[in-house]
Amino acid sequence: MDTILITGATDGLGLALAHYYRPTAKRLILVGRRAFQDVPLTEFDPNTYCRIDLAQANGAEVIDNWLEARNIRHLDLLIHNAGTGYYGAIDQQSWADIEQLVAVNLWAPIALTRQLLPCLQKRRGKVVFISSVAAMLPAPDYAVYGATKAALDGFARSLRVELKGSIDIQVIHPGAARTGMHAKSGISRETMDWERFPPTEKVAKKIAKAIATKKPSVTIGAGNSLLGFAGLYLGRVIDRFMQRRQR
Amino acid sequence: MKHCVITGAADGIGQALAQRYAQADYTITGIDIDAEQAEQTQSILQEAGHNASFIIANLAEQGDLGRIVGKLEAGPKIDTFIHNAGINAVGPFATVPLSEQRSVVEINLLAPMMLTAGLIKQQVLNPNCSLIFISSLSRFVSYPGAAVYAASKDGLAAYARSIAVAVGRDDIHTLTVYPGPTRTAHARRYSPDNRNEKKRMPPEVLADKIYQAAIARQTIIIPTVRHRLFALAGLVFPRLTEWAMKKTIFDKLQGDG
Ligand SMILES: NC(=O)c1ccc[n+]([C@@H]2O[C@H](COP(=O)([O-])OP(=O)(O)OC[C@H]3O[C@@H](n4cnc5c(N)ncnc54)[C@H](OP(=O)(O)O)[C@@H]3O)[C@@H](O)[C@H]2O)c1
Image 1: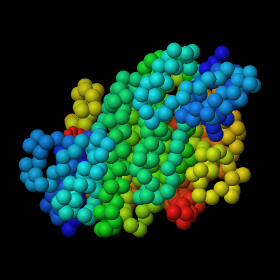
Image 2 (image 1 turned 135 degrees about the vertical axis):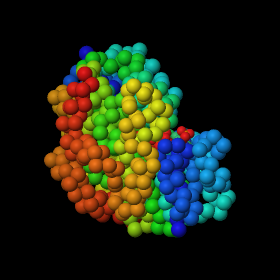
Image 3 (image 1 turned 90 degrees about the vertical axis):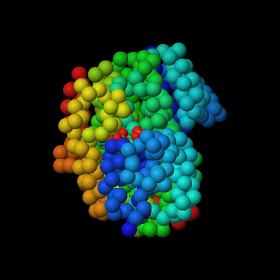
Image 4 (image 1 turned 60 degrees about the vertical axis):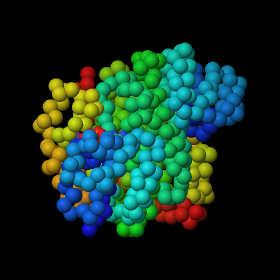
């Protein structure tokens, strides 16, 4: 079966995806920034875990070296899931924070895809980018996050054409899920009642099902699909509506 | 007198924008990395009796971004800020050096986001200010052979859209421009085939369209009818435009390399 690499597998959707693939994958490689003893991956072999902060400029090389040291030179599935958010006013976000979001959400997937192209090519593998419905909608309270996700879409759309016939490229847009990301992004419990969002196992299962298809771009959930569609095709109407709500 | 700041103003579309806004009696502050070309553009503007100065800076350097915000804080408040500077790195993604791709992200996307945040924070924008973002027609279609460029321009357009909603409450206006090929050194440098250069829009024409759209406080422009149709085709028949872009750009780029 398959050799699968998942970034950001220490929490939320990434962790749920790791659990989903564990029974069937031949080899699962999990990437995260925390120390192994601090992550809830007890049923996983420590040897499957590559520790790296993806905000670091040389993250992709570190991962590649890690794989090479273990003689892993082919990859069937690469899931770019690691992501980080920021919630708040445009001018409150520090430059360091803007830089961090671009580094983790956009640059790391670009650099890692590039670094692992040879491994993927050997297996006619697949690269999956976990974007967000936020990429298709205006995001006044998390503009930089939305920009990084939209940029992933643009990257994938063009790369797909380039690599047609050798590597599959897919973008997945989940909607809100019940993960720690909202709190990590600075959203208070009062602002966002995150417990009403679907649990990670459920979303991860839908993501894995989408990955099993050949579709170039999938939005998870009917409601989110409708939102994304409206965001793309009724752009101005949505924007005016949001603008009015902001006043 | 109104104040217009333009990144990448020494040459190409930026220079044409500087001239267009100067004609409308704006004081121009250009930002550019090319000191020599900046000096020339500044002289041209000044000799025509306009108020113009340049800040020489590298938008990929955070120190320089800090210096830009500092200088702008010390000057008159800004009525129009145009994020025009942009670079490309063309060729198959697998072969173009990653360092070049990184600069594309830094200059085309990271710098505009940092500058916008910095300018709002330091309150250097006038209440009715226009923020103008130059994205690309690639937002609606794909751009094989420049996937990271396409990423940066999609990101910029999405950012502009969010900003429009976020700052709309403060009467700040945003305009996103989706130009197709323009007759500039940028296009010549990055295109696989320059035989049809005459078909590209002259930068003065584009600059005027941008100016008019900003005055009318439009939020989006795709400058020509042909490109509007192409953008529409990209939304409705993405496979078709992908195929067209592959044939006209990517296959030729690969043929070269
Ligand atoms: N939750 C949602 O509502 C939602 C909606 C749409 C899209 N998404 C996207 O789905 C993906 C997963 O999000 P999630 O909700 O599962 O968030 P999460 O629970 O916070 O998990 C994110 C994962 O990424 C890791 N990560 C963050 N920064 C990193 C860095 N610098 N280096 C290495 N790893 C890093 C996190 O590590 P730590 O455990 O150390 O924090 C964690 O493992 C993200 O790309 C997110 O943008 C989420």
